[in-house]
Length: 112
Length: 111
Image 1 (cartoon, helix red, strand yellow):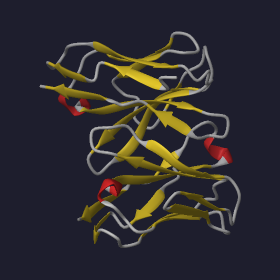
Image 2 (image 1 turned 45 degrees about the vertical axis):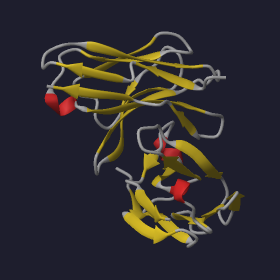
Image 3 (image 1 turned 180 degrees about the vertical axis):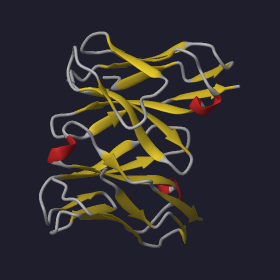
């Protein structure tokens, strides 16, 4: 089946640093989604991308839909302690019908 | 709007016991999903319901059954719980453009 490779698996950074993470696939996706999961909570949708090349921001978060449609990137600028959590990418392809394919997540730790 | 709600939040079962996890959404979404989340495994789809009256297997359906009771509610049943079903279970519903919205989860331990 389809797989998403999400990297890095984990990051430990200092408050104020910028963060980048990405997802890649061997298949084409027509929708890319980025979620954040706080400890003990369900994933929360951060950003949705629907067109190749699209760049979308949500506060200090910026995500891009890769032009090949096989990858997506999430950047967090000027990180703060509340950015701690697990960030998941997810993609939808037309062959996936009504389902999403999820990456395994990037765990972000921020040191004050 | 409450979004997606799940009950219970925590549950401990003995091997062989049965239970039903409840999920409801108030966003008038057609599609609903059940996932399990295990350390290092990410989110794995158990079952989904693309519309009221239909259900389909996901990646890991064995040991589970589902019921789409109406448009709002989608339940997950464990008929005979096993320790391998210890996990965190999430319900989700799908918006108009494939984005999914998740509930807070049920943390299940099977001893």
